[in-house]
Length: 320
Length: 298
Image 1 (tube, rainbow over the protein chains, first blue to last red):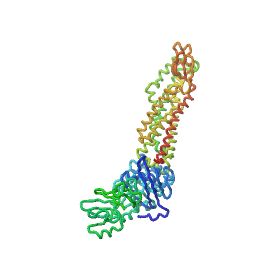
Image 2: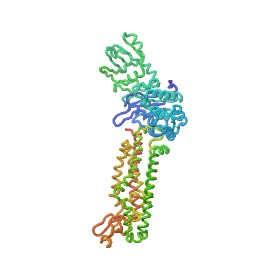
Image 3: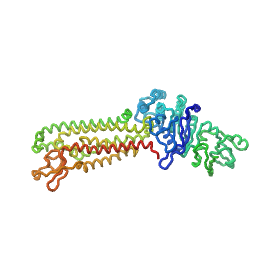
Image 4: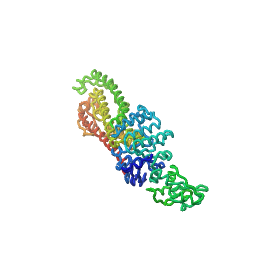
């Protein structure tokens, strides 16, 4: 499943201090990240975190206010044919023309994309059992999402960007859609960047993780490494942060215990020396939620990075 | 892109053909009976030699039968129809993509949105020009007998012949495309475009048109001072003695100012120029704004 070791030709995606301002408000700021070729990367963050802004700059729908973003080494320039052709894109709610037939949508794809692969498109909907002559408005939500994905794949772009692709689908359609994405990634050595505000949608499918909130990247890297590097530590409530091993990302205090997400390699040793301490592996969701619940002033540009210590009544965020 | 434009606008194209077919039926039926009646009531030779003076009775009969198109209801419909066609087609061109979110699909294919827009505008504008020209041809043909009595400079004739009808449609279309980009909703964009279009259309017709060129002045002939001559457009016999001259004003001192009938084409070019210029400004602004939306750095 992990293919991001095959990136001899450089990363599929690189953003360098990327920022976009809307009037006086920054939709995204100081965003630096890389996604290796062949990865299936999850971009998670709450609504309004800047996910769509980031995606629109990657695919060439929007020009950055500062910094730049490149796809396979080529800088993205908004509204140019070269940039647009490099990335396949499935927009949020997978918009299609409702009165078009599936064949019409493919005709549009063929007319507007020089690299269009009609055979791939027709074979894919045939496999999925979607009739070419059916109108888009007669398709189910899952089928519409599949037609959108098919159009993005048939563009024959090396990078595919999917904005909240499954949030409007029922659980079964979600699973089928993500399985198809995985299969495509494996078959054609494609790189996927998939955004979502629901973390559990992407768990098990993504091997690269980017956590975005308040317009900043909070955490980015290979998903397995990040999971390995974090532990959920249960300690007596009175334990001060200073005594904890490694970096406390997020702390939740209950009546008798505190649960702390820590980033450290020496957790196991520390636990052995303390009665009543317990360290558990973290789930994808616990990891992401820990970073998302940090106060906005603790937002970091790179990970790990310094941030202000901000004690709160029941929630504390501490970094080294 | 040509296929995409056609696929997205073919419904509108079919509706326009339907409208044209209805107009053609109306024009052929009315035009044929007008031609028959004209030959009976108003011998062409009489009109040519006497400027209508020798066949006043026939002219009155003919006008009584076919003059209903000067009534207010007919005038209102024909006034707003070009504007309605323009805003209905222009209002949804961009706004529909924004309303339904399909702009993310349309503008993320390998065609930059500027080219997407210019291709669409070129094709739809071309279609509207063909529609306008066809409507003009039908109206001009069926009105021909009436125009021999009234000339082409008077309001109801001038507005639907020559170039201006097409220019009105284009102008309403251009306004609506721009409004669609700014307002992002089809129906409000149509309304927002129609109101200024109608205002400009009426102001140009009733305030500026009479003065596109300096009117000529002449003394009212002695025969007319006794009260037999028409003082406005389309009435026979004319004060000026020539069918089709447009009377601008009657001054004290027995002077009349008028626009001669042979200024029809210069006036057509001037008025069409105004509306085509407004169209170009609106569409140019749309193209620039759409490109800036993507590339503009706040």
